[in-house]
Amino acid sequence: MALDFSAITPYLHMLLAGALITLKGSALAVVFGALLGILVGALRVLPYTPIRTLAATYIYIIRGTPLLIQLFLIYFGLPSLGINLPAFASGVIGLSINSAGYVGEIVRGGIEAVPKGQWEAAQVLGLSYFRTMRHIILPQAIRNMLPAFGNEFVTLIKESSLLSTLAISELTMVGQQVRSVTYASFETFITVGVMYLILTSVTSLILQLVEKKWRVG
Image (cartoon, rainbow, N blue to C red; front, side, top):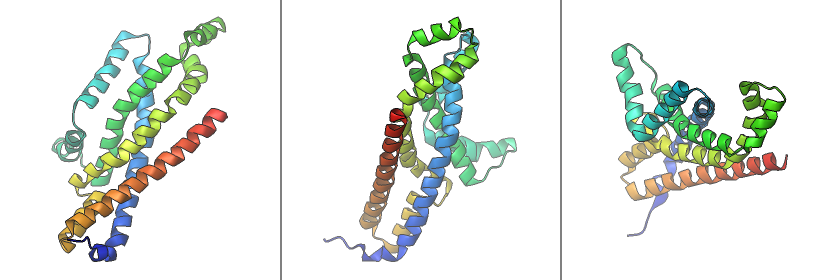
């Protein structure tokens, strides 16, 4: 049987609106996840064992449990503690916390990849640990981490499909709604898949340009 996309054409504006919500949620999550992940990664290399252990435990728990469970804990679990968050905020927080666990390891690896001579030179100059990290180590480490950061952003776009479980009208959720109206399951989810592919491809291209400019600069 030939595919017929005419049934979903009237709903393309809904799918585009869902794609925008997907992109918005992913962008917010990657920003907050990067900020938290940089902090966690920096704590992982601190010369203080208790703090390193705490950061390592956070990464271990986040990376060892499903994102879906983390989202459910925030959206369905927190209300039992008297904390009620909107679905979109819960989704962004969940994605951010999850992303931070992976970014933390990216940051740790980037920091440890900086030659030890940089640390030694900073000590000779009398710089404190935190000034060394801020002005010397992190700027160099970030250059090495850019490709991994880009991959994490692309991953977040795809993982944002789980926000549909919180009844957020992102791309996957809208796709389900369109399918329930048109009964064109195959055509609907092919379209949704293509839209995700476009989002991730454009994002990857932009990040590659940023990475190239950063390295040249």
